[in-house]
Length: 486
Image (tube, rainbow, N blue to C red; front, top):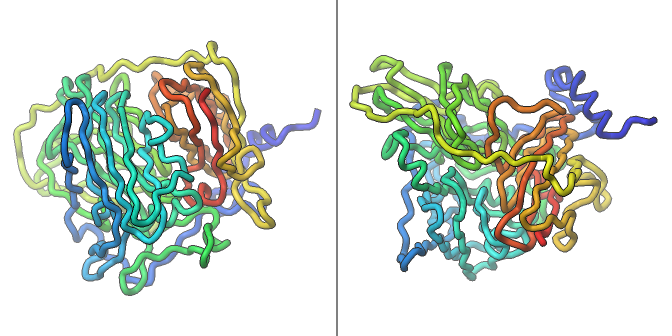
């Protein structure tokens, strides 16, 4: 029997990944990899600016169990690099946009007002959302128009984020600044003695590149979607921003801090480490069943993790760097914490955090295959799922409401895969089961020549949704598939 493409990829993954990665080349000849876009502006000095904390959005009004917000997308200028003004597109004219703090089960309505010169789409990443408000990539909000998105939030407490999701143009529009954090709380989480208030920090991490005058560089094509051929594997910036500031510093007390880490980069994955222990308490879909002490955390684009760092382990005057072990040179740095005072701290990380239901794959109604690869498209090279580019009108799958399904995801090169509507659990990576109890995810990284099996169940809403690669250049170049819950 001849080996299938999936068999070949698995064999490659077992034997050739390390060698290929060390040489910076593709496992499959000609398959593009992410490329660094060098800034023309001098790179700023690390740890020279304070960490900004995005403002918390206030509802414009509340009625009963509903909170109403308004996000206005508009062009603005921001001082991202010291001494330079950068034109951005921002929610409320800021980058990142304001943080929305909502509550599980309390309906949140966001009115999006588009004051930009291009169409946009709002997507609540990780939201359990009806289809008309999920941000389907062709549900455009035209310049000068507005649209209300209704988020019932019938879901667990979790660190989510919101961003633009316009078909073919998500990459450049998020790169320009259309992203922000969305935090959902609930009674279960609030009953825990976790760090809170100023010690509960959203950290939106992304990379960008800058022109000599401070404008954002991006290798877009003139008058059409996509990027220049050299960057079709993904665009990597050479400046790491946290909450919109380059390599910032935060002064902290000798106490525990909760860090809500969000990878909002277009194509860069991070291996985050403080050089000491971190306690991971949450994933994309909310709290873990129990805390896990780790030395580092890998986040591909779109993934989130909640960690607790105990700075009482350090002396006043010490510095603690959050580094990126997957980066080199300046891109190996992320931010720095300066321990500068003693303060009382009554927080704790309990041994039990939450109840996480385990989905049983033995009850799956169907197993589906989704193959993520490059291929020929419209006379050129694009990114495909099951050998086909995205077609907004073609449904790649029709799962039944309430059914458990197993989805088998296979890659050629690395692809962070995001599934809309409901969270999932990872069953296996190259046939090996993950350690520890299950956790809820909405984005999972497929590394080079890898097969990941996930189990999911779609609930509450029928309608059309998408799954796609969250390398935004791949997504814009057709690596997306529609499915309809029936």
